[in-house]
Length: 270
Image (tube, rainbow, N blue to C red; front, side, top):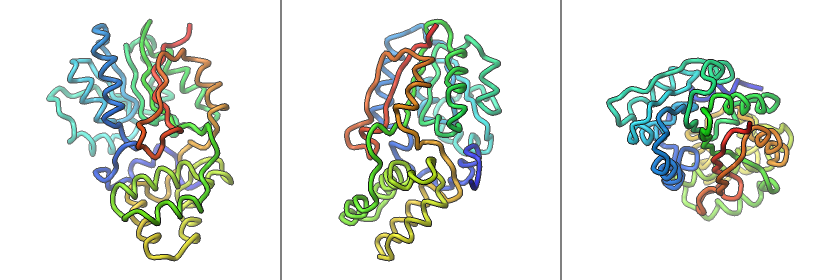
């Protein structure tokens, strides 16, 4: 394995090229906005990672916001995108440790594809700590990548993307499908982008394919590791051991993750 997931974000130097669903979509934010409008009791929030779309939306509703971030470098890079003059409270450290200091504290905790940063054997404990950090009746609003259906064959992706122009959207969508949802996951069981790019580069020497891979590397660089390879049947047992879902929605229809990404809003069990 080339790196720890917590180190991935320092390698992304072109975040301005990253588009949904690798960051919150308009549709996703509309769902969260509806929850904020419907419950005026939401006064304190935790954001797992420096997801500025979440931070900006929460501060529009004047919600006291805490940003849980291990990598202060990444937070400083994203801070320029914050709209509000009110600076959120930054909690520095690994989520698996820092959440312990905030038991029962938050009316809402929001997460955008965070579970892939946690090794599989620790994900259950991670979700347990999130549930403990929620205040009574608090809400966990999560976007999670699942694998409820077979992984995508490379031959299918090659055929599909041969018909598209090589541009930012194509590179983003290819990154989602090839790196996070394809049969490249079968051998390792997790995402190692260095390994994936080596196999992809060997798949074809056609010019358009090489250009697509170069664009993809700007979205999702080499030398990154994420834990998104497990089937949803395995993940869901650990997930719903701690949460009772009140909303379970697929990603937006045009998303390359459609049918694989879920937007789940839950209450903590117990």
